[in-house]
Length: 264
Image (tube, rainbow, N blue to C red; front, side, top):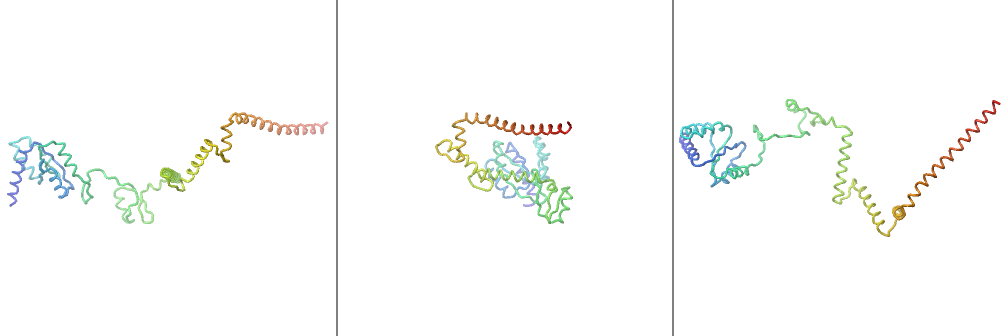
């Protein structure tokens, strides 16, 4: 088939689809592989058809149909970039979901435009020191350490921040270890304390007594005795302090008498 015959055949097929189907999807096919396009055609079989073509040829074909169907003129502004047409008479929402279900992530290629923002977190680039001119051209500050390139933000991390991060990590390790019952250096002290508390609770609730629980049991059995003993102990301490202060006053008076005797 010659180029002219292929063009005429495309015009006829486009006109047939425009007359047959009531709805048209204009889809962007950037980074869509031929295998993926085949899957889309297969999923729409019996419910719609996919038509691809060069934009110049599509515009020329639409302009020839405008005289008969003026509404097709509204399609012309959208014929730009790498697009295709999906014709259907079925529910638009269902067809759209089928088209989107075939969308998959594709690896980045040279000169490809990402459909969404790509954020690369700061870190070791693994590049040689001689490649820093690339970052300088982009206005990205860098730091070279033993042949590795880092962001200059690492210099803003102080000792307090490092200690805080270390303590937070230790707390997280201890929490996870306690939750799963796996002993670690960070969780053993907490396990011992929790075990001792459980032992005290068992001793208080039962007749079993050991050195650590004797005083607690006495508190619980006779709390009034300890409530009275506390003020008495405080009063005894005050009396002892007063007795210690009294000899000091006597010594001062003796010194005064001796002083006066010298001048008489």
